[in-house]
Length: 143
Image (cartoon, rainbow, N blue to C red; front, top):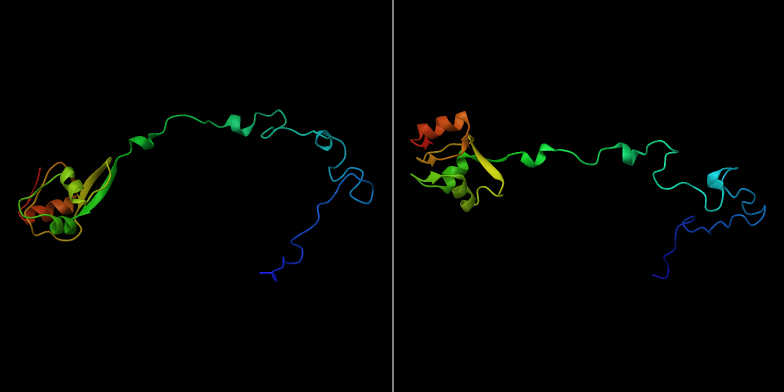
């Protein structure tokens, strides 16, 4: 631990300004005349020389439809055949209880991925056209 050293150039002394010609004297790195060269001078944060500042030009409130979007959880036929038996009525609450769909503002849509061999009854869910064909072919129904 005692042998660790900082790399060359990592530590430099603070430049003392305004103490004669040998140490950044005269204007001390502030340029020539002007508001920013004076002690205590300068403008506040966000000031744009009298132009309307960016933080006042941009709108900070308004309407957004994002809180009204409807989220759909995808449920495939493989999942239905794995989790449910013949004659089961599948609703959104049943899917949530089984842990297939999670979230309180989420709806579900049954897609035709995979195969189903059980006669299930789907009630109150969105169902794709390919899923309707496979479910009715297996003897199930959609309400």
